[in-house]
Structure formats: structure tokens, C-alpha cells
Amino acid sequence: MNNKKLFLIDAYTILYQGYYAFIKKPLLTSKGINTSPILNFTSLLMNLLNEEKPSYMATIFDYSNQIIRKKEYHKYKDHRKKKPKDISIAIPYLIKILKSFRIYFLYAKYGYEADDVIGTIAKKAEKKGYMIYIITLDKDFCQLVTKNIKIYRPPFKGEPKRILGIEEIKENFGVSSPKKVIDLWSMMGDSSDNIPGLPGIGEKKAKEFIQKYGSLEKFLNSTHHLRGKIKKNIEKNKKLGFLSKKLATIVTNIPLFYFHEEKFYIKKPNWNSIEKIFLELEFKILLKKAYQYYLYKNSF
Image (cartoon, rainbow, N blue to C red; front, top):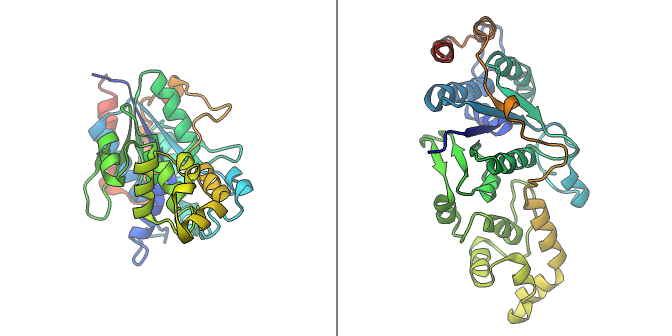
């Protein structure tokens, strides 16, 4: 059994999940602070620490809107709304919590996104014999799944947590391997990231073409087999297909990003700091779970 497990938390998807879950009736402290995003994240964190008892973990944040993909395609994520004020307010509190639990956190840099940082760390850790669990609700990460890299999907909309491996990805997306998810987005596009895809190609057609040709590249090199309007549209927009694949592909080799095991190791938490921030946020129930974990970490 592989005891070297690394948990990588995609910070913003978890924060946004909490924000939108209570958007009509946010959870406020007695001082009026909206704790919905941070409560959702902290609840997940307490469950992970107490149930999974990980030794290695990191939380990854996006840093800015200066994304290298926007240089390739200026409309990339162009429809995204500005970060809500309550998310921005939540970040400093989350940082205090992570520091109190002595959990490593880092930011995306050099124009890359959190997806790329997570992808790079996951691949480097895999080479060192780790089993990696990416905690996220973002379907883009499915392309990274291997026998040693899995998606840890937290409870969502009444559904229990799910661990997604190779077979689950193949079944969910109707593809022959997780890597083919990239080809799927390349053909049909992805509205969440504003990836254009190929004109006239929906999910059904994209799956058919991937099954028949195997990849976007082989499909675009076989357009002579097509007929009518779809042939004309595809041949006219081949560059858009290649661009879409580049935008959809998570970078897994960011320069100057390394996997130093000692940084990711979770040390014994600072109870005084935990108690202070939890009481400030009025997380009384979670404080009990935090103490349970504190006792566990101090038992060896």
C-alpha cells in the first residue's frame, strides 16, 4: 500500500462553492463578516484532516488576472465576473487558518493559473512515488488523472464526496482515457473558461469524432472525409481548434516550481492561534473538530 499521499486543494473552487451556496442568505458573524466561503473551506479542511489524516498537503491560490492564456486568446475567461468582495475578505482569514494548522500554501505565478501549479506539483510528486488527491470541483483537472493522481470531489449539492479515478473519468466523459478530455474541450469548447472550440461541434459530435479519429490533430488532418457545411466550417477554423487545445491543456512543467517534500509535510498545529481565529470567526462547532485533530497530531 502506498502511504505517501499528497492532498492538493484548489482554493478558489472551494471558496466559491461556499459563497454561492449561501448567496441568498449568507452566514454572518455578530460583526457582520460573511463567513460562508471560509466556513465551507474550513469544514472541508477539518473533515480531510480528521478523516484522511494526511501527512502532506498544500493549498493553491490563483494570483492575478495576468494569465498567459489571455495572450493567446484575449477572450479567455473574459466573461468571468469580478471577484466578489466577500471572497477577497475571506482570503486573509483563510491564510491565518492555514498558518495555524501549519499547512503549506502557495500562489500561481509567472502568468500561470492555479490549475497549472497543481498540475506541475502533482506530476513531480507522482514521479517521487506519491498518490495525489486533487481536491476540487473543477472538471478541467480530470485530464490529469492517472493511476496515481485522482480527483477528490467534495460533497456538492447533496451528493457525497467522490474519488474519481481513470474508470470514473472514462465513464463520466465517454472517452477512452482522461487525456482525451482535452480533445473533448478542444472540439466542443468550454463555456466556463470561454474556450471557443470548433464551430458546429457539440458534445455528441465531439465524442463521435474522438472515438473515430482518436485526437483533435488526427481529426483536423482528416477533414477530407467530411461533407457539406461541417467540412467547410472545420477546414476554415482549424487554427481555432489548435488554439482551443492549447487553452484547455493544463501545464504540468512550470519552470521554477518544485516539489520539496519537507514544505508539504504538515507539522503540529498551533492551538493558541487556531483557537483565536476560530473564535473570531465564531466557528464554535468546527473548533471542536480542530481540537480533535490537534490531539491526534500531538499523540505521536
